[in-house]
Structures are given as C-alpha cells and as structure tokens.
Image (tube, rainbow, N blue to C red; front, side, top):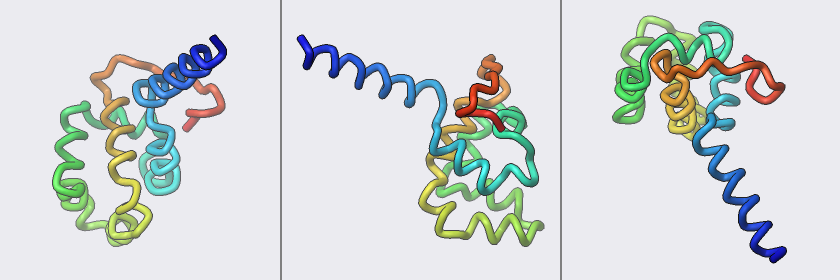
Length: 112
C-alpha cells in the first residue's frame, strides 16, 4: 500500500511538472531573456504556441535570425547555457504562449 501511495505521488508530481510549466525553462528564461523581454509569462505571451514552436525548430534557427541585429542577444544565444537549455526554454514558451488561455498567478515558483 505504501509503495502504491509513493508511486501515485511521483506520478502526480511528474505530471504537474510536465504539463503545468517547465521550471527549468522558466529559470532559463529568467537568466537569459527577462532583462529585455520582461517577466516570463509576459515574454511567453509575445507569440502563440505554434509560433514559439517554429522559433525553436532546427536548434532555434529562427530565434537567432530574429535577434541577429542584437550583439548581446546573439552572444546569449550562442552561449553554452542556451545550447544546453534551449529545449526547456522553448517548451516553457510554447506552453505559455498567448493562445494557451492560462493566466498564471505569482505563487513564488513562477513569478516573473
């Protein structure tokens, strides 16, 4: 019985982390994007989810093109940190695009 409860709790937390928002993506956003684009959910609302998906295709090729005239942004997008975390960032932005219909509150974990 105890094993069943532990398994259920693990599944619940796993499901929440996959579907609610990407915590790793939020942290990446805060480190790389917040200073120019504002809070995470404000930044995510800049585009719809399918537009974010397009931005992050082919190792974020379109995202890099959009920022090509910004030397600071290009430096960030070429950083090892971005290369290691761009998938989580893209997942966060897609899951919170302006068409997703979710207005998140500030709960201490996801406050921009």
